[in-house]
Length: 356
Ligand code: G3I
Image 1 (cartoon, rainbow, N blue to C red):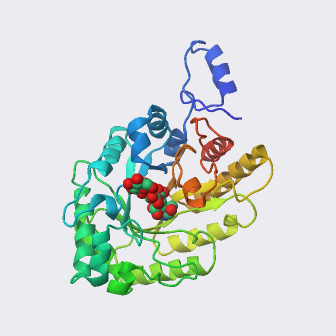
Image 2 (cartoon, rainbow, N blue to C red; image 1 turned 120 degrees about the vertical axis):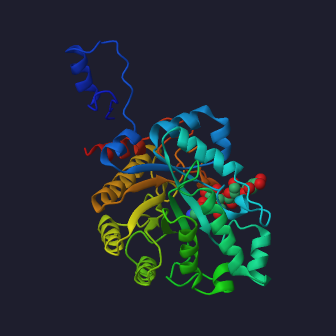
């Protein structure tokens, strides 16, 4: 596999040649990281972060800080965590992740303010039968965004304001918020977030809308209407939960066309939650890992060419991934294995970032 070095930015062989022609031969050369390579391109490379391993595992912390320049809280910024009790905001878990990011010069993608999952029971009740559901949603959004606003000690400059509001058929999803407030809740959510921090970049985030199809057409149409209506929406997150094997990832041409039409609306496009399942493919482990590396490489390469500015993975180590719990099957969807060793997918991402 290709090896990059931090000191010279050259391949190991070239670094060796350089060291024999001047630098001390015994000088330690730190490997170049995904983060270094993304910095050189002016984009962010990110990972979703879970609180427990961040607190308990040195290898988790080291790898995260070394390889990534952006973090997303995998769970602890969601309503069931930050407002478990009405009116009482508890940011201790999310603040710990935001502080880690700040200490390591990483940025934070805020995730997520409005979703149909991971809401506290009281908020679901207010949405279903409460007197003022709009007020409760507004208070939640404003409470969270204000805590992390631009002039706070640890600002969160980007938010997934609304998550997964459409169905696979491209219809408005029937959720606590669509039922309580009607489809206008989307525009209101963006307006409330904007009011709480006028400097924050506000995103709509969804899955299964990466390539071309019914759902991505609907996402595009919805965003076109929001932008056209003067609603403060600045970007779109393509989650990118994909897999190896035929039909489990968007084609490069479809992905490029979709990103282009979203950018033509004036929106910034981020990949927000990428992982690549192995269980959707067949064959021996080595060939499935090679297929996985190819999927990561193809998608990153298409996204870079298409002008995305941030590329986040949903985790980074197979030791901590939502996929086995969700599918009920072991997997290995991320670029580091359970021992934090780099997999073929890691080297593929590095090669693409390096422009090889
Ligand atoms: O907090 C409880 C804990 O108290 C309890 O002991 C434990 C026992 O199972 O469960 C904990 O809740 C879990 C929660 O994550 C926090 O760890 C839930 O069971 C579990 O279902 C939940 O899963 C999260 C899922 O969102 C919720 O739908 C995943 O970790 C998280 O990766 C996933 O992330 C979503 C994005 O936010 C949006 N896009 C899709 C993505 C994958 O589903």
